[in-house]
Length: 182
Image (cartoon, rainbow, N blue to C red; front, side, top):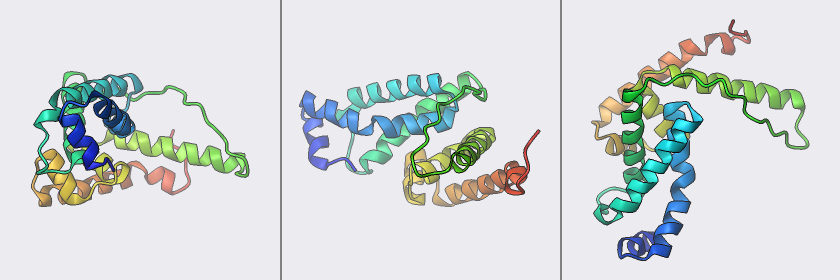
């Protein structure tokens, strides 16, 4: 949660406050971009563009909406624009696995496999379903915050989430049964 005093200082032209503010939100911005675009480099580009937009538009932020909702609307819109310009491809980049001591290697591998299956399934969702899933389950937004971020009616958000969960169940059916897709 970003301190309101930090936001006000950044809006007043305090560059140090603005840099601190951007550092506090950069991880959430990247996380949203990554799950929406499903590609590391595209997510980095979208994150950078979103942070620049926050930097240049901080003066236009009004306290009508929560700050994080305002920021998520910015990053989501940028990702949607990128998605429309270039259809995303499923990344097959290898990600380094870090094992914590005390956990079994088998449990870590299964957990990483499950995370990859879920990430791939989310990537296959239609754009509007993927967006609400990312905001709800990865960014922990409430239904009302999602509706505000995406400028959608609350019932539409609920409907999108319901349909997205149904689609994810179908996409993850083999994994839930303990099978391997092939």
